[in-house]
Image 1 (cartoon, rainbow, N blue to C red):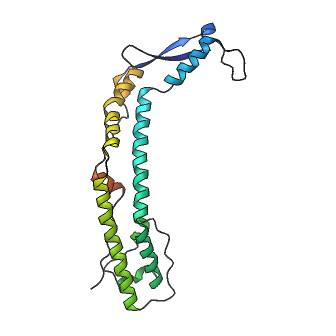
Image 2 (image 1 turned 60 degrees about the horizontal axis):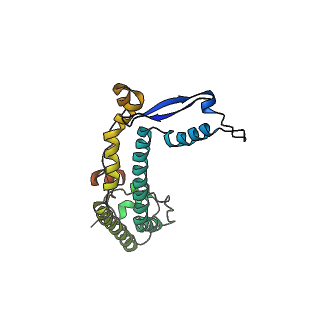
Length: 214
């Protein structure tokens, strides 16, 4: 058996080899395991993943958790908009009936809000009812935008950006320590962008606010 692990004096992960009796037999079925082999196995658990891989995993995890948090919070704030969309579908008969209350089509709102497909009414409601529901929908969209923009502006993305900065700064260096080549280490590497308000809004956008006629 051959066991590989180790860190050189510069702190870069390198490999050393234990063979034959020094490595011993690592038998999952209960065969004899020498002390040297047991120690080697424990050390392998500490050094099985290179530093640059862990660096990438940390950055990926931090970004994924932030996106998950934003998606969940945005979905919560969209509940009222989804309710108003459901109410709107109930007072008209098809997507083209926007013209009875809005300046432009509003069908994109369903996908942007991840709302259920509309269940259109059998007949048009009264003009007064249609205008009232349209006003409620427009107000809900505008209110969501205000609340969402405020939440994003106040969100602390410092921890995520620090993880991204560390990845951008050390990933190639740590990979070079393993590969022994600057060219190979830098191959396919692209720095991760930091998070700011513009990036969060690009990934989790505001809503188009329908303009009510008159």
